[in-house]
Amino acid sequence: MNDVGAQEIEFFDEVTALAEKLAGKSAQIAGAFSDPKMMSNMLYWRLWNHHRAYRALWDVCLFLDADIVLRAALEAAICLAANRKLLGEFADIVRQDATATIKGQVKALVALKDPKAKKAIDQGNKTLHNMEGRPGNTVPAKRIELAMLADKAGVQHLYWLHRELSGVSSHVTGLSLMRSVKTPAIEDTQDRLNSHQKNHNFMLLANATLTGAFAHASLLEDRETLADLSYLMTKALFLKLELHLSED
Image (cartoon, rainbow, N blue to C red; front, side, top):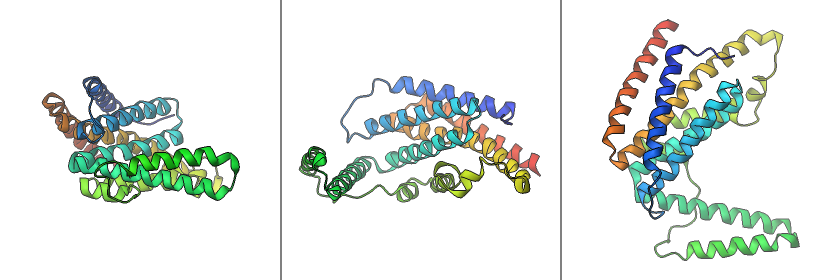
């Protein structure tokens, strides 16, 4: 079962309502891939879907699975903040990453030396030719560096939370496996860790959604949503303060 208080659940529901309303306003956005508003829209819909998926898993007490979705939501929030800061430059970073990914896949397929992979290799090389032949696409292929994006966007804390989740839940690691095993010698420690993760990460997802929604609404110049976000961000600070006071 979960141990989150009524105030936190009410807050999360308010964030959900605001995020859904913003998604509705974004439904008709159209534009080129390089348009920062269009890029923001693509990223925002990914964040909104992660938000809903997290809550669905959390409601049925699949907390480890919810944390895996949370990590993806943090990535989307970081990218939304970076897109707002970098504007058109962010689209170039995404293209570089796509090119690097395809090159890596083609290289791996070639290494298999399997005749059945020829069709996929040819298709990959054709896609690379089209992407690298685009006017102005002179920057070499390069993987997205999430830490760099977080730093440029001023959301380094989201990156370190993302890193933390990689070790304790999202990847198959010693810590993530230990969360699922009851060991009498450390059962109390496990229970405290799991309780903290359930409560802390519930609010973390809500705040990640707020961060992403703020970046998206700012680009859309949606003053109504920005005003609502300001209220919820202030409320989040008070809830965090009350939590620290109660722990003391």
